[in-house]
Length: 257
Image 1 (spheres, helix red, strand yellow):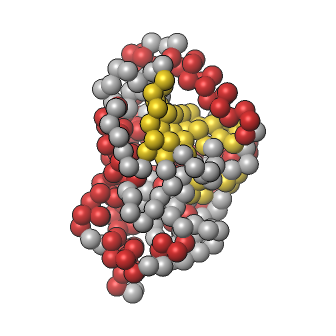
Image 2 (cartoon, rainbow, N blue to C red; image 1 turned 45 degrees about the horizontal axis):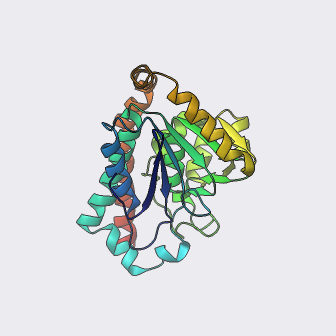
C-alpha cells in the first residue's frame, strides 16, 4: 500500500482504515485522498473502506488564522494549487460514488468543510452522538475555531450532496448560514445511519464491516453501483459548477471585491 502525507493507513482482514490527519498550511488532503481512492478501486485485498480521523476530529476546515494569511489567498489562485485542490475534490467524489466497495464514515470527532462532504459521500455513516457536522464554507466567521471570516461557495461537494440529504429549507439553511447539526439530530432525521456514545463507536463500525465482508464482493459492488445512480447523476451535473463557483469566490476575495 502506498504512503500518503495526510493519511494513515491500516489494512486488517480486507478492511482498509483511512485515518485523515488534521489539515495544515502545507498539506493537501484533497489530492492524497483522490489518489488513494483511485488506487484502491482495483485492489482485491480491500473489501471495505473506513474513513475516520487521526486526531481528535474527523476532518475539519483549517484553523481560522490560516485564512487570514495573504499566502492563503495567493495559493488559492495559483494554477498548481488550484489544480491539486479542486481536481482532487472532483476525483474524490467521482471515486466515492463509483468505487465498488462500501465506504463507512466513522465520525469520531468534529466535522467541517471538506469533512462534511466526505461524511455525506460515504455509503454508511456512523457517528459519535455528540459530534457536530457543518459545511463551514458560508460560515463568515461564525463557525467557532474553523473556517474563514469570509464566505465562499461550498464547492467541496456541499452544494451537491446536502440537498440530497436534507429537506430543501434545511439544506439551504445548512448551506447559506453554515448551520451545524449534531450527529444525534441527523440520526433522528434519518440522514445518517447511527449516532452512538463514544465507547460504542468502534464496536458498531467493526460489526458493520464484518457483516459487509460476508456478502459477495461482486454482488455488493453491483448493488452499490445500482443504488448510486441518482447520486452519480447529481455529482456529474452539479459538482463542476460548485467547484467553479468556489474558485471564483477566491478570485474575488483575492482581488478585494
